Image (cartoon, rainbow, N blue to C red):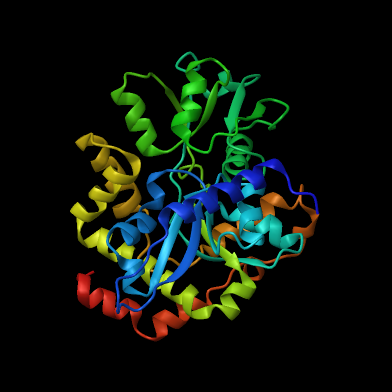
Amino acid sequence: MRVNTPYKVAVITVRLALALLLVIPPAGAQPLETLNASYASVTGSRIPLWIAKDAGLFEKYGLHVNLVVIAAGNAAIGALAGGDVEILGAPGSTTMVSAAKGLPVAIIGTFGPGAWKLAAHPSITSIQELRGKTVGISRPGTTIEFATRRALLKLGFSPGKDVNILATGLAESNKRLMILQQGKIDATLVSPDNLFEAETKGLKLSILADLTELGIYTTASDLSAKRDFLKNQRQRARAFMMAYCEGIWLGKNNKSVALASFRKQMRENDPRRLEVLYRNYVVDALPLKPYPMEEVIQTEIENLTPTVPEFRGKRAAEFIDKSILSELESEGLFSRLSAKYGK
């Protein structure tokens, strides 16, 4: 099988990270099992992973977890398929398309709902002025693309005909705003914290639509894994999800812990933006029980079917695996977290 260049880069990135992050436990300590997890972009939605890492929760459950960034798409799913990472944090559509085409992978959890707004250059002051202009997305086949197309349809446009769609390759909306400033695109979907950041820098934008108000619901991102990993490495998968869940509860209960992770991982020190990050990605978005968002996944299937015929007649349940979270809930994990953190 021919391996593409992005996948080679991803593999090299992972292996370098593993070499740099290798941990040797102290004498007499129980050895930690290594698990490699990737996420697609450095955005606030990753906060449960960062808290679990920074607060030592992975170690609490017997794991040494290496977190690496691999942009969503072929490189990310290739790293998962090849075994270089066991857990993938990326748009669920990435996993779903691969699963529909035969790769045995499943969505096992969520980072919570997205909260996108369609922002445009300030010269565009109304929806109709978007006609003939160019809207930037991240990459083809991602949640950003499908959400953008759905928004344009809701607003009365035919995507690709009335409004041009340009793949920028940029997963982070603040980076897409930079090329909007340069005149390479006229509009793009932007997260609330990146909007706040733009405002503090004096960047003028026209907010043309709020996707939630349009009735368009997306996930900020999802957690996925290979099905054989979930079956044959069950304890490692369970340990990862226990740490992930506790990271959510700890962040909601202890604001200072969450803010410390935002500072460290996003190199953000502006108190105002930290407040926005905390409100958007911890208070508002994070579900206390991070089950896959089945209704959103079903909508994604319906949106993808015209371009991915393998989705025809498929249901969301075929692309998710809730068994680990269900087991943990039945064993009392969430009750224990509630008793500990008072939620």
